[in-house]
Image (cartoon, rainbow, N blue to C red):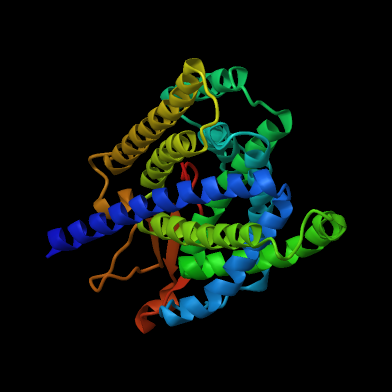
Length: 376
């Protein structure tokens, strides 16, 4: 029974990844096509956020997605609002990057996500990495550097925008996993919450920057059905891509997600080169592949680091210590604690107070332990 359930989960993740790769590559090709004819990346971001907001509510209710959970306002302001702000910032700069440079180059630059993850995890969580992890960043940096120096359509704004977007997406992945764990909110509801908040934050910026330009642009008319159709298609595809990405993130470990994301990047680069036909050199392609291989090497180094930490954790510190003392657990016969249960799971702490044990209730105290990365 357990093997059948595990096989079903693996097949579900596999099909989701295949669908994710197809939708993501199509979304990037459509997005680049739109921006070549309609150079308004902020408007494209606006359409995508509007699509998430409008489509998510009724369709999630139709699919029977679990309703919202009660999130305290202080937690909402501390994590949810910054997440939404980061979402629209990352989306805007991502669109600016594929507007200014080829899709293949933009995604090569986004392969620097492990570099941002290492830096941000050090700054935010105080986490140190092994030497192998640091060494795995070298081919990523070299690959992106080679691709940059040999890119025939290089643009400084495109490079900077891709780097800013990558940093924003790194933060999103780190804190989205934390919010999902802390609150128990459904991953698709979290997508809806972030999209709606980001839309309201972004609306004044879009009005000030793009709306007046669109009204003064005499070359654009509402009868240009091709552009309107591509914009709507891009919005729907982006919505689907977000749903699949959030679904995969909720089903697998951070390491598996990182590997799947790196594989998706290879697929998107290959499809964009084949369909859009932007000129590349052999050295340019070598730089792209070196960066992606660096990402895979980073994922393997992180996996080995985690396995070593896990092995060290379960080894006994002293053969004379009792099982309860080594694991900081004082268990009663019925499975509860004498003085309160502290159980570490995925870097967080659940606590059952002593006066609550008899009532079979517990209070949840989020507590990130040092060295736990939510996204790698």
